Structure formats: C-alpha cells, structure tokens
Length: 72
Image (cartoon, rainbow, N blue to C red; front, side):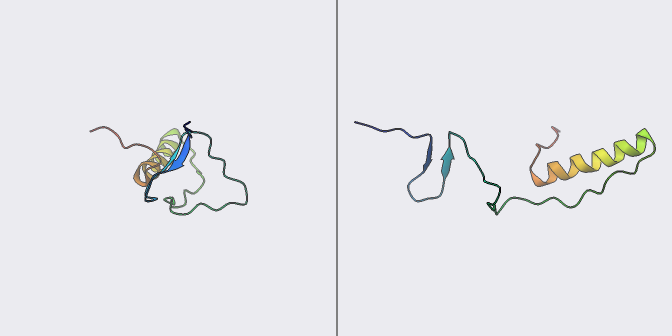
C-alpha cells in the first residue's frame, strides 16, 4: 500500500513542495519575502507623467523579483 501527497517536505527539510492549495489565514505572518519600497500615489496630470510613475512601479516589481525582468 502506498500513499501519495501533493504537499510534502523533502528529507532534510530544505525543500517544501506545495502541489495542492496553500491557504494563508488572515492572522498569519509570512517572513522572508522581499519588501517593496513605497510607491507614492500618482499625482500625474499628463499621460507622460503617468507613464513615468507606472514605469517606476514596474521597475520595483522587477527588481524585487515579483515580476520577471525584461529580455535583453
């Protein structure tokens, strides 16, 4: 008789695999994730200024690893 599980920690504890649902309750705390610098609300009054603000946000997302970097 064998048993397969979707969620498991490999021997030695170095790697945990989540193949099912990972539910994080509201009162839970997650540590070790990158934190973004504050992105102030845009006060842009032109499309060009809004593009600049938006690109600053994209740069932060890419720098911290929340978004893949552009292909070069």
